[in-house]
Image (cartoon, rainbow, N blue to C red; front, side):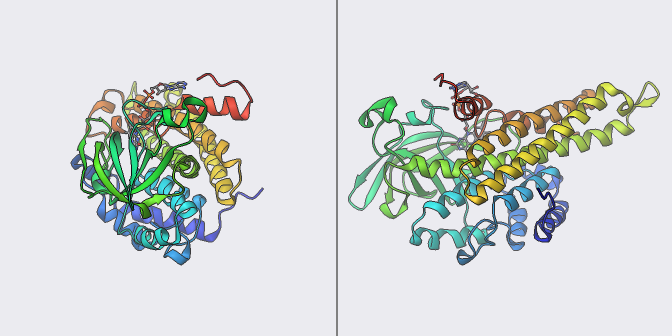
Length: 390
Ligand SMILES: Cc1cc2nc3c(=O)[nH]c(=O)nc-3n(C[C@H](O)[C@H](O)[C@H](O)COP(=O)(O)OP(=O)(O)OC[C@H]3O[C@@H](n4cnc5c(N)ncnc54)[C@H](O)[C@@H]3O)c2cc1C
């Protein structure tokens, strides 16, 4: 087994270092506090050719894979620059479009995404369905050459900064398809322009510090041309699952990078803060949790690379590996951020030290984009062959 990165992959890491030094944590924080899109960073990533890293060359992209994209994501986050759009746009929407888009959809959308001109956000979560996405109630009904979409979503990240939203809706209700046994039927994915008539949104009060923000989204008779159905009507589960594994890989990469960033900050602080006549980094009560977290982050990072590698090969094992990577990376990142926060004592709770927000971000990783319980359910059922509990 060869763990050596190619020259091209190493150069992605070097360029990520350069870009994150220019648009650094201070820049990211300023955008996050103002809930302003990181447009300068985005433009710089576009100039480097990284917004279309997984877009096929014929559509203006680099034609690389999730492996390269996840390297980029992890390295940016290692500088404290967490790019959530890389999870929902590059991570989820591009793979779904590349695999299931028609030629017309791909020619219309992919070059604009690769150049950075257009971005996607993603909307599946609903108040009455939560984790049980099969129970979503948003409904798109065919009307001539269009679909008419009605429903509500919430927690939708970055819709005010996106040009399109990939919406999961029902084209047949849960009851119409026959309830629980046929629950996977009747789901469809739609590409919806965020400035569509009848689409509105308002901010949610999530206390996560990130530039994107979360939103309640309302669809009130939104007219969607039939050309914007992604995949086959009623067969959206396949399209969705092809986007969710890359999304998990990107979330895992972000968690590993953020964990590394928190550890580095803590080490710098603990090595210079003197209490009881010694740097507090000397005390093993602080040192060991950081060392253990470092080892676990490394495991999460390796698993993320394996998942990305399997995904790029089109291997069926990518689903299991992506879930495992997300689980291990999120847990390691949370452990790292907890250990790092402890080093800062009371100062960890000050705004100027900028540690608490990353702790909250790491905690989020165990809930979204998928909670750790659902990952364990997946591993229990599919890897271990145990009965399903829900
Ligand atoms: C900051 C943030 C950003 C987000 N961005 C987006 C976005 O861009 N687009 C989008 O569509 N959604 C987004 N979400 C929504 C997110 O994916 C959901 O919050 C998440 O999927 C869980 O749904 P829920 O909050 O309704 O929790 P619930 O479904 O109410 O679940 C609550 C808890 O119950 C447990 N649980 C539920 N079912 C089971 C089970 N079968 N077995 C064991 N335990 C279980 C889990 O511990 C879970 O955490 C975001 C959320 C946050 C907080």
